[in-house]
Length: 180
Image (tube, rainbow, N blue to C red; front, side, top):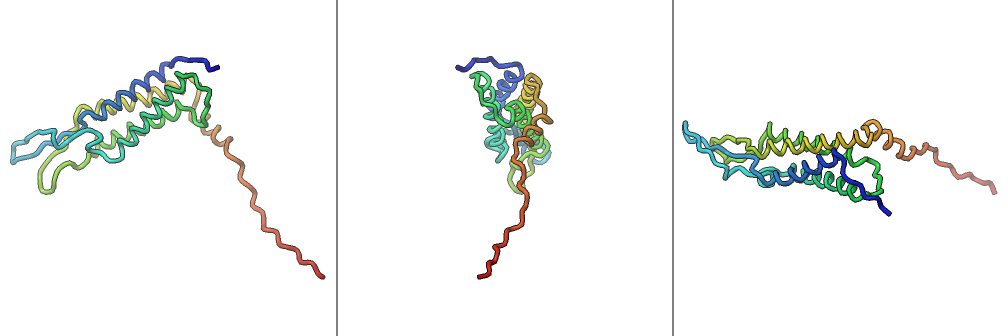
């Protein structure tokens, strides 16, 4: 029979942060200010949320959210499954990569304007909150790793020891010729 366990602090942090990140993906991340001579007309109609303006990053963010929610569910349900990579370590790495991806799109926003039109892409509040949520996922994963006494070095050693040993290269045997 499975023993039901509650979430620890780190797991609760990354679960809440993952849910917030999912919600924030539907908030405006970008706005566009069109330039008409010296006057700037600000509109968010041409901007949009993560789904409308980005191509691959939303899919990676959804993977990060799914892993974080799944890891929290495994813990809350008392599952005995022990994957090769501890869920907290996977959540920490994916949260860090998600934060780097969002930061990269803050530094290099998508091209939202048309050709020959002067415009500027403005960062909206949603992208800053999404960055904070992704950092929350990473921090929660790191905190959960500390609660479980897991380190990246330990994970690497475990993965190294679970790999099958390489086979020795042998020379092909030549068939012997028997004289009649």
